[in-house]
Image 1 (cartoon, rainbow, N blue to C red):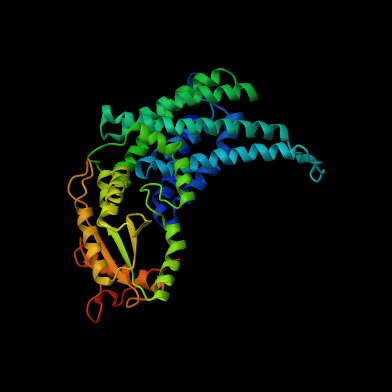
Image 2 (spheres, rainbow, N blue to C red):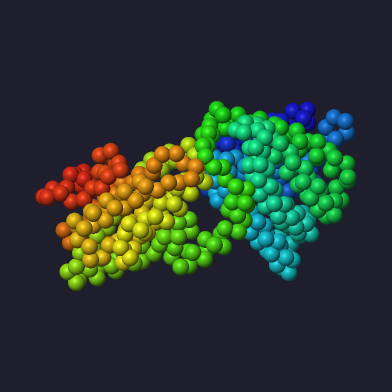
Length: 431
């Protein structure tokens, strides 16, 4: 009966979590992450005091075997279908949240407790033990999450694109490490017997196979993984993204530069562009906006992976500056979209600059990516196309969409008297 209940709990956990993960496009991935985080206290509580007996005298905790094993596989699933930067978010959230719990429990000890409910007095000693266990468990989770991703990538060499052995064996190896590490804390704080160590190892190996089967089935039948062609991510790149890359990103954010491409970022565009337009209009000088978008970029991510997509963006951004004047400012507006601000450049000259930019992008060779990458560009110039940032950006953006609808890999600027790109086209808002 206990074994059947454990299996039912694993299936229920996996079904609900993957359903939320599948709906991330509608509700956002934050819902999935919040539910993942709420399970952390329950799994730690159960691992501390709730144990059941299986055949052959094996004693295990559902919190450790089902909930923790399931969470680790869920994080690996996020990495497989999203990227390392996304899976890093809940890991850091849990770590900092548990630090906060330990700090608050320490301060709660100094309260003078009112006997409002004499039969339910707070057990701050146990709460402190729980806080310490949660903190230790999250530190192990931080290590486990990195290890399972690295193991999963390493096993590509042996198993190729076969998901089941890669997920199951990665989980078995990391869960064995975690069982040894977390048992030491359980034995120290709550006196869990040594028999729970061996029983937990056997049960976690079985859980790794069960969750591996379900995850492989999900990736095959519900949300298939595209076969990635070209260079696979290096293990050092994965480790860097999961751990220390945020320091570099924070440094670039302070200087107004995009972390991936090194170009000026969206925040800096929002701060600088309104003043540039206002200054140009007041002086009676033209200012042109080039809004460029990489064609079929989603296809690159889907067919070759997000790592290859990032590599393509880095190569393109590196070459863009060579097609522009030194006075032009180029910003990564978001995703695969870029905005170039050209002060003092009339519309005809701006269209020529956009054409140079288009040809430059088409000449970029990204290692491991077959074929060429193209871009569509919309151009708008003050004062004919507008006298505010919103008007100019909206016009250039509408012409960008016209370029895409016209077949992509082209530049669309202003025509003689009427611009068909603007007809019935909703315009995006800028800050």
